Length: 252
View 1 (cartoon, one colour):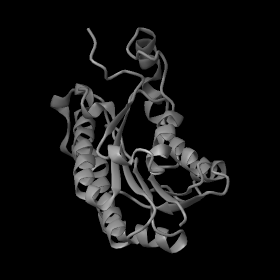
View 2 (view 1 turned 180 degrees about the vertical axis):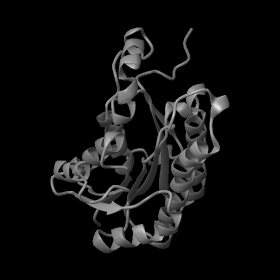
View 3 (view 1 turned 135 degrees about the horizontal axis):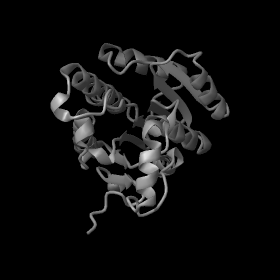
View 4 (view 1 turned 30 degrees about the vertical axis):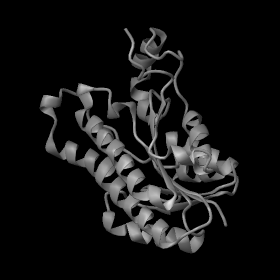
């Protein structure tokens, strides 16, 4: 059976690191994102996958089209064996949580939680409807912000805390069927999303914030996704992996 990975937001940042790792491991990678197929970063991402990638346009806010996305992926490539829920958005504006506007709250929750849940739901349904001898998995890319407080981006923290629970819910629901579900919590990762705060966090990393004393890279997350997708961690279903260089370890 072909190994088909579906990675949301797999055209940039952490998602691209995951897509590249899976392609190098022999997976055909279906990238789902809202950009147009001819967008430069999409074209560049597909080129970097060495012919192992396909692109499918999908807006996570449009939950009515989850079935359509999976229909297209299955028609072109086959059933998904490894699903990676990675796409997400940051807080629109960093600022005092007491000034947080409802539209900003709803946007972040709509993508990071609502949209992610209903796409994962459709993937899970199809995995159950299409029994396979191959190992299947679902991985949710959340954040250390699922547990570590940042009061200047409350909506983001809340969305990632909810996504962490989402991973546990799917893990319990799918475990009897041999489908593994995992959560990965990246720390401070060098991507376009963190470009605007690079100087701030570089100084904090140099000051000892991260025990590993460096920025995380998208490849750090990709290196963990591959053994998960391959089934090497099957009995660890429901586990959370902190991919943060020790950032989240409580210290005095």
